[in-house]
Amino acid sequence: MPRKSARNKQNRPVIITGNWKMYKTIEEAAQFVEALTPLIKQSPLSAYLSVPFTAIHSTAELVKKLDAPIVIGAQNMHDASEGAFTGEIAAKMLKDAGAEFVILGHSERRHIFHESNSFINRKVKKAIAEDLQPILCIGETLEQRESGKVEETLKSQLLESLKEISAKDLEKVVIAYEPVWAIGTGKVANADDAEKAHLFCRKVIAEKWSQEDAAVIPILYGGSVKPDNAGALLAEPDIDGLLVGGASLSPENFSQIINSFKV
Image (cartoon, rainbow, N blue to C red; front, side):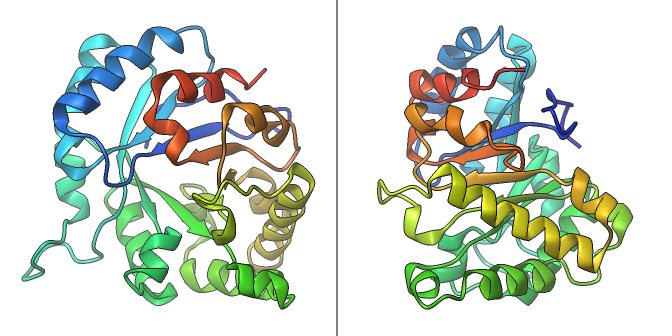
């Protein structure tokens, strides 16, 4: 599992992850890492970067060379160990390339590629088995929010995506709450709304596993996170980090988000 990061007042690790999606070549990724490293040297956090598959190995090697406070991960994976799955990638391949974590269940995977909770559940289990830290994404659409189905949606996504996960394995999971209506739209759940959603997720985990498990699992917020709202989000007691999309493509913006965390 990835290196330890600073902890918040609730004694949970603070994780700020950049999700580059389908952006950056190998050369552009290297330039980004070289630019970001000196900007976050004083931060108590390690920056997580979900880079394209093609850039995992080279950026992981560069991070080692620079001794940078950066953890390299992937944006998706298949649940099979190997096989006739053209265009897919296995957990052991990600590990071999240098990835330490993987984002699973992102809304774009759910809605564009029609991934089900059961498929995501199999991926989570495989990631844990292969010692890749899974960052499980959940979140409601605008339609679900306006029809009063936020809690129903989050509960089903959590319980079905984490089905048959033991309390011991749950310790290896990070959850990311990303309201779909706030991803790439410029809209953002205000800190109070985000906090309420995170608190509800902890309630679901406490009911299914235990209060102790709910108290220690890191839950990140994602959805139009920028330097000017990162501090307010991180100040909420149940928000343990951020999943950053567009703003993570700029080393200056991403470093400001990372440096907005105060111990």
